[in-house]
Image (cartoon, rainbow, N blue to C red; front, top):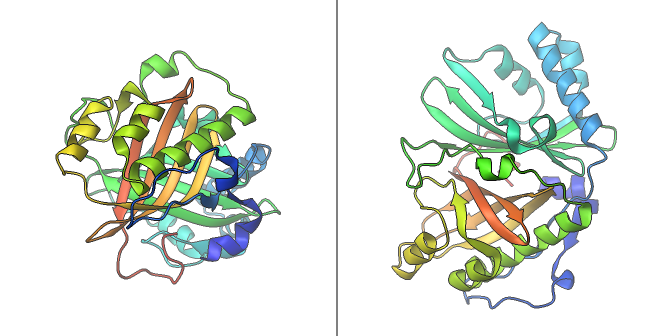
Length: 303
């Protein structure tokens, strides 16, 4: 729970902001307590710090690179030990065949930003096949890069919907919107309600009927477009019981980014769901899921 000590000022209890509480299944608790940052005024300084760090790495400038991060720098990745120097070591010793393709449509400058956080979405190949990956980056009050989370999932050979797992639907990117902060907050509350009603409350069909466009665009490789394929799977018993412990919800314009600890019968997963919301409805969805390993190279956990 280290990050809550760092970011406790940003944690909001959302239950008081909702007009009605969803029905909750016996085995799952509803969850409206999560990190919920506000505003976008820190984006420029956070991006400047990140640019400084990775520019220094490219030049082999160790001292400038190290000066961009807080001490301690807290790591939640399942692949790296704590501290900022292991990141330097990784960047200087990439494996043969490594590639990283940023997904630039996610927001201005290729980042989703909210409060003191940045989100990256990437396709990464460490020489063993392509994965989709989300990174969450936190910057402290001094503008230093202070904390990092990531989760990755191997990309499928094909998707049921025929949509790319990392692309965005042209019908939305060709017709951009510009929502204000109040609308972003409404989107955040809506997604929290959808998760609690649909998953923690066991009322998935009802939640999708309330909050999703019937033909929403699906980028999960195993599910087709729209509400029906998902509700059909649930009705057929093909979706396991899962409890969502929501850790973060970030909102920027028409995108809402959710990081959750999801407990199923046989596994605990770190999962990011990202939704596009237009006119009060979910119209597009992406996700990345990674099983939480038993052993981590640090004591911070993935959350």
